[in-house]
Length: 170
Figure 1 (cartoon, rainbow, N blue to C red):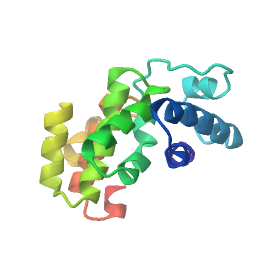
Figure 2 (figure 1 turned 45 degrees about the horizontal axis):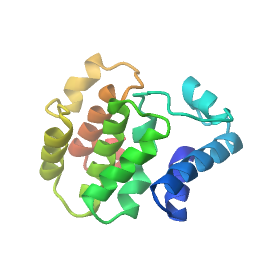
Figure 3 (figure 1 turned 180 degrees about the vertical axis):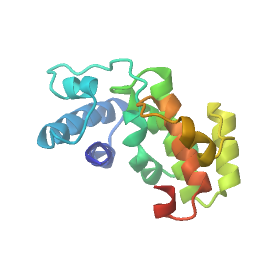
Figure 4 (figure 1 turned 90 degrees about the vertical axis):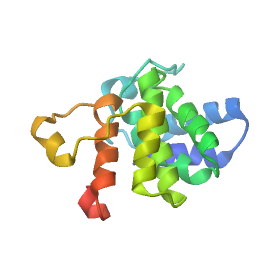
């Protein structure tokens, strides 16, 4: 939640791509230091406190967890994908970290703009190569706590696709 707010704040400040990149770093570091017990990963926590924060090739799901504002702040899918990638790249510059952010933001944008769950599923499978064929009941018996985009983003999107309410999805 803290990094979601930081991402929203950075994009609301506006600017060109380089300004946005700098604002993302500044906002994430400022909010991260203000809320140090929010449950960050070890590498991200280190990034928060370094004087020269650089991307660290992460494919963790933090990039997907914080990206939702992008899906609400932009009005076309390509811009949403571009800005989702930018929001990921400041830390999670591994292709899978970027893909997880783009897939999540795309699914949210498509839902926000009235696309059906079938259309969202088809788009995510086609564009990102995620396997969304398993049901939650098929996922649960073998699921274990993992922090990678590859092992959490498809599962989260599947929960959304199957759910009928916020509580149901959670």
